[in-house]
Length: 253
Image 1 (tube, rainbow, N blue to C red):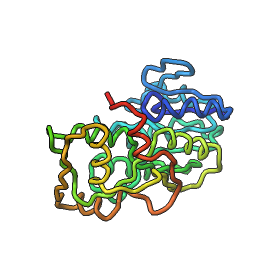
Image 2 (cartoon, one colour):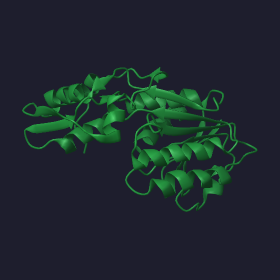
Image 3 (cartoon, rainbow, N blue to C red):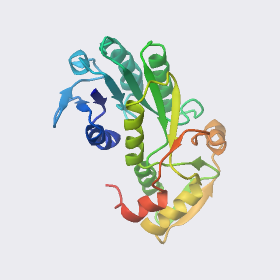
Image 4 (cartoon, one colour):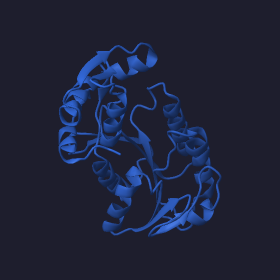
């Protein structure tokens, strides 16, 4: 099938594109610059060249996002532009990459991701919304940023289930080749951890002299994370554990 991947140059996209090709699909990689093999130009923030990029696509894997900039423009308004530009006569399946917990965790970025889901659900397109937990690399980077010399403060009682990006990409290939579910499916890592346990395993490999300190986080965000909002109750699971990731991956950056 003719597959278009948005966000193809991102962390997930770089793992996803070759796996789709290996599965026998013809893959086009959409980015603002449209560079690289199979690259096509399209900008969700402005709509520039979206119609040309999406022309003929039978499957769209929508992995583009903007967590550090303006997700309301790229994720939400971008979803509307995608819906308007997609080739409805050709499209068989729109696979949208989202995040576990966006309907329960009170963060601005998560609210934007949830709003983008509602735009797509209202579009009438054949789709599957795939909510995935945070990648190992994100947890790795977050813990390094959090560390303050010999101290590693982490939120008390937060529950997480980080997943390997390659496991997530492989799962998306399977979803893309299947029939649209019409709703939400979830995918997570093979294990659940408290943030303190996650941090202790990280410190043993990355910062052996660091001391993990669990700190209470008040408010709705802390309550949601303690209640397991970031951990799915059902759905598929990856195979690569946090310990395996730490053992064979260099520090990020």
